[in-house]
Length: 497
Image (cartoon, rainbow, N blue to C red):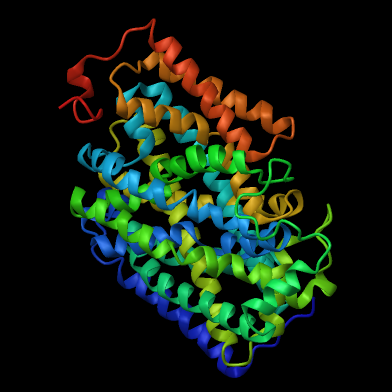
């Protein structure tokens, strides 16, 4: 695809946005003196800022690029990642899980699991989350490179390098507070930019009726308007959507994802934490349309050029082509700003959270238990740089192995989300889940996911069956092993006060 030459106005908008957001992030870094300031913003975040930050911690560059491409391939079934996998899990998390996490004063989800079960569980999930977050950082960088390569003609490595430097500047200095307040700006810009893209596309197609007619005429789009496709669907059969996404991946993501939950742990109170989740649920209702509609519009406008999605088809080209061909000069700057907002918000969230995990769950307990707060703060900043470099080095591998960045992200999640959700669910809802049961369920669940993934099983089924395996083993082993005394479970289990 040919690159686009930004007009002076567009370039000015992008540069001003980048400079303003980076400067704002550095301004928000003032007063960072302790590790609690860096990792949890000193528990001073307002609920509305945490809620908006959660939105863009979830919806970022990988989703803008990935959902457009996968909507081109599969249709409106991709909306279920918000309809089925988001709204209800957010509300369950808000009123059941999140108040317990906040009141327990933990820094991380693995820390909660360690207190509920044992150190082995805490360490296992901390290591897995750290590897997952490096993979996610690489995925986000691939998303950025796809857009910058397609629109500006930048090389892959130049795109990755520029993105790392910009995000690293304020994430290293300001920690969670800088991340959250820059995310608030990014949330507004992202919604405005995605809305503009959809408006321009619908206008170009000639309305929703014309869009439906254009999509239905293609030979490969028979089920593109099925929200829950048939059981024979190649990627998203409805039982897998309901069970794998609705019962496992969605709840596990919103309840056990460190990058998401950390924002609420930095709020002023448990009530604020709950309110941030509810706000996120409300805002997220608009994103199924904003992110999936561009893929359908691409079918109507560019199916002849993009062609049917064959085995080696590149889904990451859809959104850059849409922007390059449809967006007029003057508006291109806003669209680029929205995309950069998604990149920066997604990246800073995962980098800060991974840094928190490594320092809190690995370094402090095992390497240097007597480490001073100043040392942990300094290490947290160093780890941010290391994670950016690691993600950059892995990014080319992600680019060459996966058909779309969204597929890569969901595949990474499916390896451990089933086991994680089983331990969180039974750990919080019943006192009878034992440390031995937790360890056994964790190992069997992750092993099951690895076997199923290696066998080529759909990632939604991988998530579901790994959850079932982890749950069955956890319950079985817990029935024959000793549970923790109630004193150790107080504040960690719903029914133990």
